[in-house]
Image 1 (cartoon, one colour):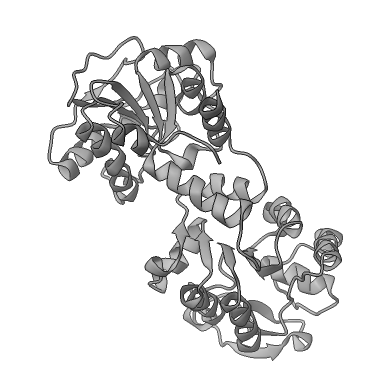
Image 2 (image 1 turned 45 degrees about the vertical axis):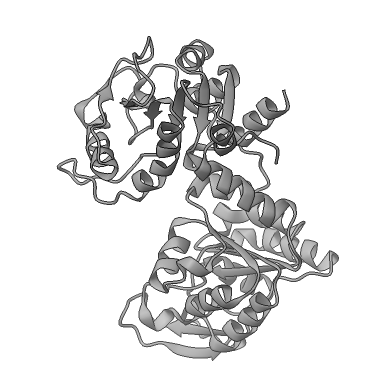
Length: 397
């Protein structure tokens, strides 16, 4: 992917004295009292902000927070808690400015946080008049919010169209590099793990990957649907019977390319969905009518782990069992440990996947952990994200 990197502009001395507008992702969770409960996104945004300040820029940063109504600002929509936390982390005061669209007074070396951008009328529909006003505030626009890269909004897309220079910040650039390495130019074999409760939510991803990958590992409720499509019993397990033809189509597409969707040969079952349910390992063909499949079995886990160890590139989205329950975590743990031990380049994304990575402490052993949920899934679907598209256009123009 061709795009301008903000880090290159800084190293070339092109940022000194310039007005820099950074679109960050500071959409952090808060409790009922408005206190920030988890600040990873704020911490992740600081390197780009520091880079701009150290390069001698006048720095404006904005983000969305929650789901405000455009044109109807409410106190709970405010980035005030974010400004406070950002100031604590950076060791400096971070003033918060509202009504900023019409103009911001700022000198080189100064930093200001611009109030919740989704409160501005026309933001979500990417209205040109708003986008042009935003672009007029700066000399350089820096997109550093991968979590919003799948949305064409005024603060993510429109401003990039009209700003003098539009580039990718370090967070977004890292995502673009990792995605390109994993999907555009992968080292073979390319193995994808797509798991979750429903085939329907991942069907377009499965179809897109069926034309690219060498092995497509399915897990969770998705695997149950594929087992059923293969004529195997699944008892009272979660599955989507109306999508059996779709599952068979994915398997046929893989088979036509000499690839496969490995269906579990053994599973871990229980009579109820609970943490203290008794776990029983069974052959896939021996699942009883009153059984629920809550994990892949040890034999299947061993086979999949061997495939992952032999992979050149691994894309991971979703745990293969109910890993939150210790009795049904064996499959996901085996997958996680194999990815950690594999020499393959690995990219992982999705909330449950990140939770599994944290549970097994393999953060440092995964090649790249994607921060964007919806954006990551759209990339796997084969879509070109609006943010990538406009930054490529600006780099080529």
